[in-house]
Length: 258
Image (cartoon, rainbow, N blue to C red; front, side, top):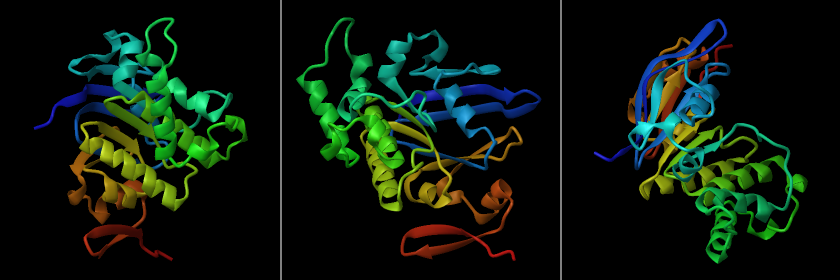
């Protein structure tokens, strides 16, 4: 069995007056793509931020490479774990290339400037997300979808072992969604671990190995994608689902309940 890169043990996450996650245990291993599914307000974003060490858990521990995440220097953590927020944490500024190059910061020594290898990685990441022709553009002039792909390129340049992504397909058209998730899936086959919240169960069925199901009841179900059933989605979203297959692909569609 592959190595557990990130672990949660007895994790509790809450907001005032409500427990979102209670007693959560999970391991995220090299070579795995794990999708997080659930309705709005069920705690997907807060769970990912807690796993990234960006907010304190109410109880329990997160371990990165077997050690308590909270005891590790943030600069070191950034070489091993990358986080993509649902929305930008700061207004866009600078050129697209400069923004993506920031992903190499954690790998540079103090007072060390980026070099030819860092620039090569940045250009390769821009090509991976289809933005290489726009590298000189000001980030603020890009569309929402282009800025989303720029943020993903910055994470690719960071080259962590663990990718935590909060709705990475936000603002992306269907072709871009498939391309980005396909690239992330290939990263797992090279030894990375990917944990991504998604709104579309069919993207999880297509790319993920496991799913975490968050219903807002504080319990998180953890199961393999081949065990995901329409009944699971009905409990998550409060509507009936139907399953169909096209060749080897499984799809879940909301039923017409009119």
